[in-house]
Amino acid sequence: MGTYVVTGGAMRPGRLGIGGALKQQLLDAGHSVIAVDRSDAEIVADLSEPAERLRAVEELSTRAPEGIDGMATCAAVGGAAVTPQMLAEVNFFGTIDLINGARPLLKKKAGSVVVVSSHTFVLWQKDDIVDLFMSLDREQILAGIETSSPRAVYASGKRALVQWMRSQVAAYAADGVRLNTVVPGFTDTPLTSREGASADEQRLMDQFQSSIPLGQRMGQPEEVASAIEFLLSPKASFVCGSVLYVDGGHDVNLRPGPVEY
Image 1 (cartoon, helix red, strand yellow):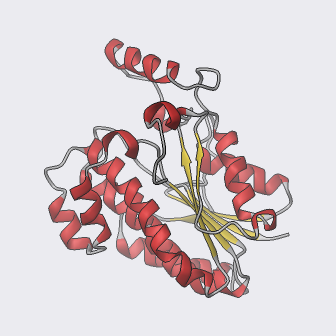
Image 2: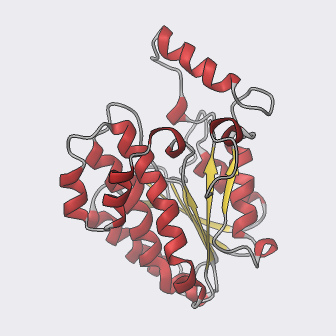
């Protein structure tokens, strides 16, 4: 059995997010799981803070000195009330800083990484913001997105994660570490809750859901978690640099025809 790290892996009462569902599946399979989250986790850390990200990596090294078999970066924040800077810190840097920091631990066990993106980048990404994220210059990014809409920053940051993953595949593979990305579609998680949504917002969500080819329904966290679990596992031992959509075929309706990924 292996040792896995799941950011955003808290299993709070009520509706599970993708990270919580993944943690449960890994535990059910007999693995050890180290969740990193802002509460209810083995490592409690505020991933919006650079010092907290560094501390989380240091604690990982203490908890798993022999290495880790895999990491899934499920932690994310979203919504119109979240600042662009918070979106960048948690969703983007909270992903790449932990992966880069855990690289020596992953190398020890020839582990695997699954970066969790979002198909929202298909709809709302802005190329200039994606390019800004890809500079990897934190201060420049935080200054450059200050007046951008949270929706554009969220989507662009998620697209940048895909590009970052692809740019790092060869270097990590040289250490025996596989990188892949899962792109969840419209999934029933706390981030997509209809609680507090206006009638117009709920109508838009209904329309969005009705355009999903497979059952005109939202995905469940467990369905996305199952795809992540596969990519983390030895069953995916030659899958490296892939971008897997788990969206009920939604991307086909959003982007008909051949696409880059």
